Length: 253
Image 1: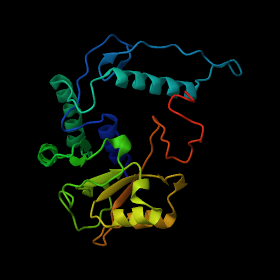
Image 2: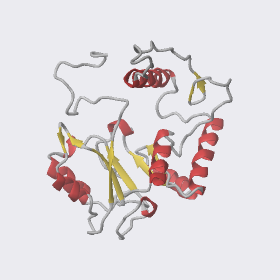
Image 3: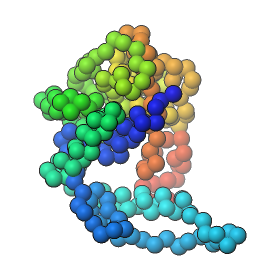
């Protein structure tokens, strides 16, 4: 089983959406004020559900919808993709992740670039802070291919990986369909020596089979590696199993 503290390290790194090229700073606000990445957000008061037995219940679905809507609204008005954040914000989040490393947690970073010099620089900066670096050729939400550079993972490791603390490199694939069939996808991933792979549970509209998952658990060299399931609670994809033929962007809302 994975130690909960180790999982928190992953959650922290991904929730912060830290890239070596950028991170963020938060400003102090009035008590109770809602902020998203340091920007004040007007708090919307939801209509409470009808009391049951005289006790009000929290509508968790409505709370989640409001959270996603507020994140979406902020993202649309934020800086263009690929532009680094302000230096102050960058230093703030770097201090948070550095604190996590000092507490013994594993921090994973993801950057986006197809430029070899940028890839090398990102790896160098991440290594200096003891982060595990990934530079993807496409944004995380659309990741459908393995990095083309380097051809073999940085810090390639022949040993079996049994815990997050042993991971020296990793890769994530959000959309596995471009690889071909499920078997073609898992064999392509198996033909690499990444210490950890992070994939969607579904290949297109069908869940990965037990055999496919077992194939993912081994490196090309034959030793074991970790396989994590990626679950996105904030976006919907047309290639996923739940997508209905008549759906379009914005319909349903």
